[in-house]
Length: 377
Image (cartoon, rainbow, N blue to C red; front, side):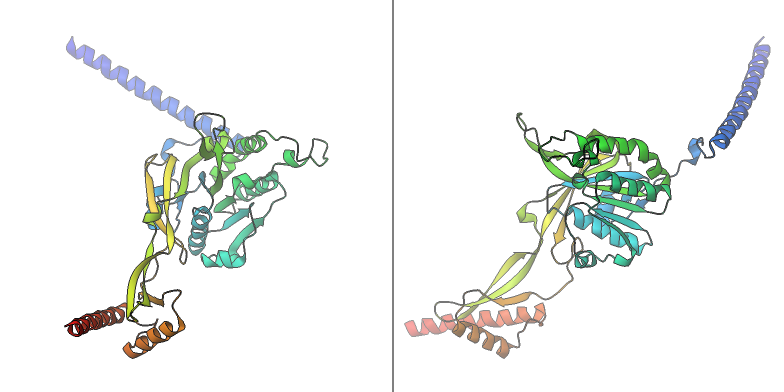
């Protein structure tokens, strides 16, 4: 009896496999016909899903934080208060993308930017697609749709989302100029919601990375919790692959550079004092949303320095700067410069030379003290 049961089980299993194979073959044929009818590959198998490529920011720590960089085929929101490094981060990314042979489009909706600012970050203006002060939000968004539809762009940046002004704010339904006294409730949010519905698939298929720069807005007025938040509606947050908030860190965490400041004390002796001068500020990035398994987790932060001179890249190694303290008399300045000349000190000298000279000065100061003690005796 056991043998009969086993044989029946084997037959049932065999028939099931045949049925599965028949269904699979029918499925493949159905998918093939559907794709042919719609003249595109709508149906695929899960095994054909590709990993998203990323656009490197050119900053190793930030790339690691994001999971490789800004994702292609996806929307990323970078938002925060003014002067926290949002545009600087994007310009650094554009420069790196250009070096990697990628095409970028930068939409400037906020304020004029001089060519030198782009060049400061290493951007090749001859290779940058640029839109300045679009007439309305629809014009800028239509530009994105066109470039993505034709698959001729690798990265599209809107700086900033809040600078986009929908037609409905500027004109009435009949095309007349709209008064500024009229309230425009959620006009941008509605425009963006319609845009995402219509264009998101094109962005995905074009393999273009879209980065939206957002301004911080005060929220919760009239309630118990007034705070800075991201405006522009829920649609952009829903469709975003990642949302990163940027803010300045503590002043104590700012990058510093040492300076040796020379002066004359009340007795006319030349002294120096080593001072720490802030040469930038600390930037804190917070991952508020992510769909990447390779990035930092939600609510994790990254703190990196921003240098006024070199952006997010470290300052080159150089000698300790020397200067004469502000407010010194002409006589004191002449005296200090004479000592520098005697000791071979100038701004081109190495830190090693300066250190040796400082030791000499300390020895001179010790000798002065000894001389004073002898006079006292």
